[in-house]
Image 1 (cartoon, rainbow, N blue to C red):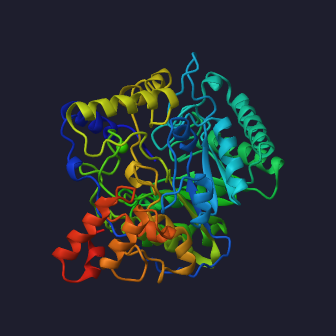
Image 2 (image 1 turned 60 degrees about the vertical axis):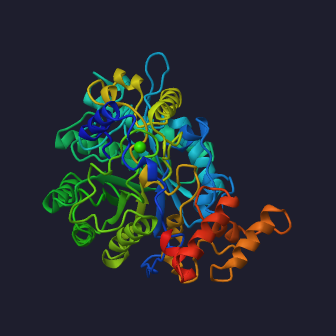
Length: 508
Ligand code: CA
């Protein structure tokens, strides 16, 4: 994912121009249905990866963010993800994302220590780890493949040795820390190069040394290579041919798939089929994501917003939790359609990168105060896409346009850290979701909204009788995260205004 350039410039301009008036802020609690419907996928392989990248999560927790289940109970996000059907975790690793004074560049300050914590907690909850080495000190993507500071100026041969040793040592440390490593990426979105190497021969040599290190670590761990732009069919085919021509050893050909940039899903399947049919390789989508809303919640503009990237031939789904779930299912289906079970799986990118402080509904001095508070946390904990300290390494982009999360509207958690119903897609693609619904307002869970639900909430508030977890979720009719007398008011209003009590669900 590219998190820089014009997108950041637009958001910075927007912040300067209109800090007091944020579009939609007054009505920013986007209504959505509690229930989502997901059609089951008949997977070709039992080990199909339903994965998620949560690389920024430790920095968010350090900044005070907590995560909650859909019913509002605080818990370990790795357990919440596992309980929701996520079966694999991806984590990026930067060599040294700090300036000479030890200040983090941001983007989660995603060093090996963070990866160890993520790997250990993933394993404790039954999930394998995909280690995504960027071989850089900060973001590596199609436009940036800068080598780590410590590798600057060394010879090509030295760089190959450094990459081998760094890969092997890091994997050993991750395993010692408790990670269950299943796959390793040699580079991230290496469409234009890797670790400051741009010629075909030198890039191939680095891929090979990385693969060699992974094989030395554990021959059962898969080696993945990662590219972008599947919409350029011939370019993707060129990469597969190139890797074969240079005898690069790998198992998995991976691509990013973002619908606003990366073409149709049928083309994605066709591109992956070329690799699977021609070279017998496994294929996967290493990154995808989709917004559940166009609202921003942290005061840093998003990659997909009211102004950016919200239209196009392949932005096919609603900007709702249902639409987000639909996108995930559709991408999984496209990969599952790859011939002979060579579609290995899909990773959702940064599905938990939420705000450190909700700006929703705030304007004027209240907005400014919240933004300043968020800014301090981004700087101190590195939980935004980049901090001002990144100027040390990336002066022209991150050093200019640093700030918060550009994808908080593409997470599976709302601004309070509560799981969205769309998170269920990771389980429901396996089982379908016919009965997995919650009708907003239906506190007593009898399938309809009526005065009995008001009674049930009154008994809850009077501490006469508790509600079930699903009943509590349904009772939060105004979706503010708590059950209060205002939910009774909301239900009374709906019952008064609408003859059909079932129609209440249409408003959420
Ligand atoms: Ca944002």
